[in-house]
Length: 330
Image 1: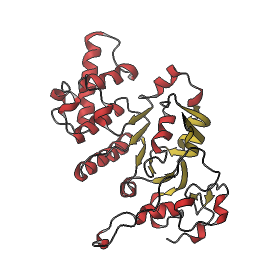
Image 2 (image 1 turned 30 degrees about the horizontal axis):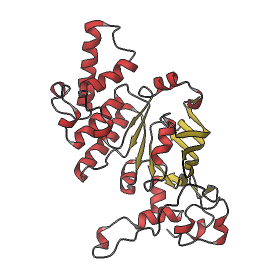
Image 3 (image 1 turned 135 degrees about the vertical axis):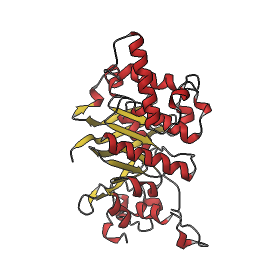
Image 4 (image 1 turned 180 degrees about the horizontal axis):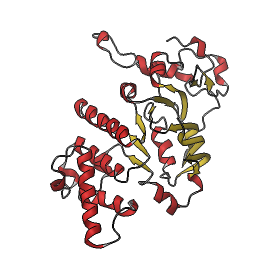
C-alpha cells in the first residue's frame, strides 16, 4: 500500500515567556492510501499539533521549525499560503475536537457547507441560478450522507439548533464536501455519550470504505483505535514512542507507556478493583533533557535511559522508542 502522506523529522515549537516549548519533536508519520491510522496518547502529547502542522494551521507564537511534509510527493512546507488553501478542504480535510466552537454560530449549516463548495468544487456551473442550485443539491446530499434527517429543511438551521452528535456529523459533512483524499478526525467523539460515539465512528468507517479515502483518527481511547484503525502511533511528550499494526501493538505492547495505557483501561473482570493509572505527570516540555521522556514515570527505568533514545525495530512492521524492549512484558 503506497503512502499518501509522509511526515519526516517534524519539529513544531511555541515561543513562550518561560522558553521554547517543543510540542512536536522529531515525529515521523506515514499514512497509506485507504487506511485508517490511529494517533493515541494523553492530552499534551502532541497529537493535534502534529496534524495542525501538516495542515499549515500553526501560527505565531508557534512555528514548524524543521521537517518534511509530503502529500502525494508534494512538499506542503514549500507551498505559499494561497496554494496551501487550495489543498485544505479539497485534498486534506480536518474536523476539530469541539464542533460547537468550530462551527460558525452566525451562519446556517447550509451556508457553511456552501463556503467549502464555492472555494473548491470545480465541477459546479460557472455562475447564476444553476450554480446556486447545484450547491444546494450537493449540500443536501452531504447532510444525507452523514445521516441528518430532513436534510433540505435543516440547511436553514444554525449549529446551536442541533445536538452534539448532529453537530459532529455536520462537521464531517463539511469536511467531506469536496471528497478529500485524507480526512483528519481530531477527537471526533469528545463530550458525546457512548451510543452517539459509536454512531459517529461507524459513520467515519462507512464513508472511508465507500469513498476509498484515508483517515487519521486522533484519540486518547485505545478501545476506539482497536476497533477502527489498521495501524496505530502512540505519542508521548511530543514524540512517537511506539508504532505498528493495531492488533499487534495492543496484544503485545513493546513500550512501557503503551503498556501503562492498556493497563489503565477499566475491564468487567476488574469489578471492585482499583484502576491502575500511570503514576506521575507528563513532563514539562520546556528545556527537556536529551533522555527518554517517559523516564520519570517508567517502572523499568535504568541509568542508561538518561541518554537519547531513538526508535528501534520491535518486530515486523513495528517500532518502539525504548532500550529495554525485551523487558517489557506482554
